[in-house]
Every structure is written in C-alpha cells, then in structure tokens.
Image 1 (tube, rainbow, N blue to C red):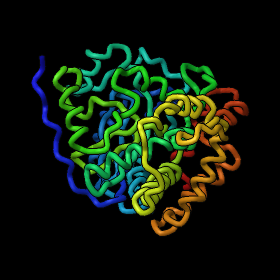
Image 2: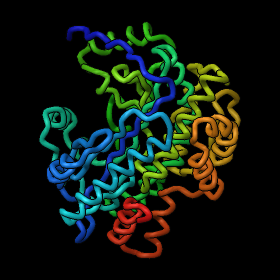
Image 3: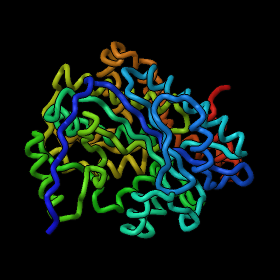
Length: 377
C-alpha cells in the first residue's frame, strides 16, 4: 500500500482573478500537418520579454501559453495578444504556423513524438498509445476563490454550466480527416483517461482532503495533476481550473470565454443563486454528451427540475442573467460576442465545417484557421 500524501494548503488569491492557458498547434506551411517544432519555438520565444509563460506539452507539435494573474478580460486579451504576436513572429522565422482549434483535422496520432520531459515520459509509459492520442488542444481557465470551501462551492456551481462552456468553445469536428459529427470530438479523448470526469461532491476542504488521502493511499494518484476532471481545484494557486474548453480559433474568443467564467463567478459569490447538490450530477454526463455532439443545437436538462430545454436558449438566458456582473467586471463586450454567436448557433466548429464545405481541402481549412489566429493585422 502506498504512503498517504498530504493535500497542499489552499493558497490565497484575489477572488475572481483570472488565468488562461491555451494549448496550440504547430503546423508546417507545406501541407499544414502538425510539425514537431516545440523546441525551436521555445528557444525563439525565450528571447521575448512576455507576461505569463510558454511551455512544452505532451507531444512535440504542441505548445502551451499562459497568462499571468489577470484582473479582467482586457488584461487577459492584452497578455494573450502580446504572447500571440511573439508566437507568430517566431513561427514565421521557422516557416511554420500556429493554429487554434481543439483537434488537428488530419494528423495521424502514431506519427507524434512524446516531448522529452520526465513527466511526459512517465505518462507515456503509463498510458501507452493514449498519450499520443492526447495530441489535442484545450483552453483552461483559472478563477480565484476567496478560500478553500468557497472554491469547492464554486466548482460545483460551475458544473451546471459545463455544457455551455463546451458548446461555445467547440472547435474539434474533424479527427483523422473525418467529420466526427461531434462539435467537440476532443473531449472523447479526455474521457478515455481513468481520472477524467467530475470531481467528488464535497463542499468542505476537510472532506476533500479525506477523499484525496484515500485516493493517494491506493497509489493510483500522486498529486492533483493526476486528476483530469472537467473542473479541479488548484490549491497552489488558490483557484479552480475549468478544463472543458476546446482551444478557440482566436484569442478574442478565448478572452470572452474567460469573461463568461468570471461573470458567472461574480453572480455566484454576490447572489448565491442556488446550492449545488449531488443530484445535479444525475444529468451531468447526458448534458455533457449533448454539448459535445450537437454543440449549440444540444438539448439541456435543467438539473434542479429535470426540464428539457434548448441549450442555446439556456445559454442566452444565462448571459442575460449575468450581464450586470459582466458590465461591472469589464467583460460585457465578450459576453455580447458569445450571445450573438449563440443566437445564430455559431461556434468555431461551424466555422471550420463551413470553410471545409467551401474549400473541400482540409489543408486549406487549417491554413485559413492559422490566418484567423494571427488576428486582424
């Protein structure tokens, strides 16, 4: 039996502060397939003075960027723009391109190389081929919580909005050159991991510590990093981390999604609109599947009442409900962007399908997506 590991204390952070991570694709500019240029990109990026960080990911055709601690979406967008511009300049020197999106439309998983880093090698030994299939690309949003118990309460309240996050960010309709008929096929790869899914229903940090002690005692889990939950606490930062977003095609959308999380968090903290319950999770997997499969055209089952409604309508109602909080936080522009897209049932998955219908060549669709990532200039 393994030794029990101690859960680290929940650190202080400013309530509603934000941090955003984006996993991005590196592609060549010949056929726009993934290209193993992470080392070269990291070397060039190290010459730039940047907010946040730029680090390798599981395979060598990926790179992860993250902001520092941000107070609002203008800060998120400003930091992401600075890093994005440096990425584009570095990629141009290497004759490659950087692309958003939750999956690369036609890469072959078996061709990918595990990035040479001890943790990635250990994961590869443990998970085998799943590690290379984890060449998928997500956005993670951290939101600061006043204390550990408040973090767990916010985590379980946010869980009701996981389908909303999935549908609005969905950008992974293509896998292995096939239209999967999912708006977010990326999450199907995440679900294959044994520690994926939802966090246990605990509303006190002491209870959560007991759960953590039990799981670490078995040796299955060695740290919080081993949980691939849709939302997980990050005690070292004093945040919860929402992990279901596909990487958007633009940093403007990434900032808007972070603003949605922040405005929801403000609503929860200031109005305490409902108390989460274990029974909320009876419809959780169904709602999550609906959002992955159908995006903004999904059905949403209201956890409290069991009422079936349109996810798109529920998103629009929610965005209207939190508009006052968004205005106070400076997140209103992003909320209106998301509301306009929801009203038209538009997300990045739909944009990719429309491009492919017009171009009839996935390489050209990826090229067009790389131009979107570069921004208006």
